[in-house]
Image (cartoon, rainbow over all chains, first blue to last red; front, side, top):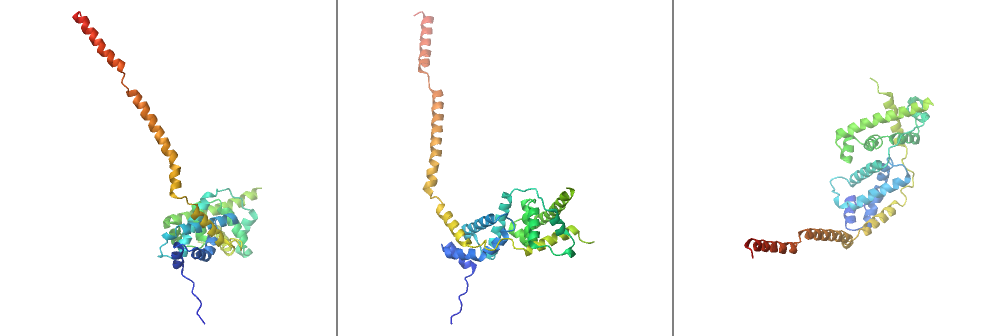
Length: 190
Length: 102
């Protein structure tokens, strides 16, 4: 009985893809698409845009394969490209005024003894509220609080200094609290 | 000093959102094929060098025309008036004849 064949490491697939192997590149896409989809889905507004941005990312990966240095895992290199693509997507989106339903906000920010907030509901509220943030602030708060990256990791992914990341995280949080509070207040005046 | 309740509320929102799925299952279906098609289009769509050179021809033609107009207009202003030169010569002859009484 022969031993099962080990899956080739990413670095070998990269070399084969650079040499012209479409199968090698397809395998790389298959391995890393879920990670990319998970990152991008936190930034886009529709399924169509999600697919579009993810395709754009892997095309960039393909075009820059010869720049990949195996000093860091391939997944990390792809994540960096993905984060930059998400930042570009955020800058293309127009910031818009946010109206978050009063009852959702009050419930969401209420005493946890009232019960757990549904994940879908929480995501809906946050997505609406974050639409009012500047792109760089939204990028940082998403990576920090949804992707659960550290300040240092965010700094490496974005190329921004750690101080800048901290300032943007603080600013984003402050603005989010203001948006959620203001929108709850507006509805109560009616 | 206790934490700001708004901060706690926001943290709860983030914690709940993290548990949610961020995209519909099935969104990745057939994704590799779509990417492969896009990569092929980009690879084949790159125009060869001579097509780039072809696009530069109108630029060169425009430069030649502008240069030609400039050279023509500058040469015109420098053209020597031979009748004026010849008249200078005859004026001197007339003056000499008048003074000498010839």
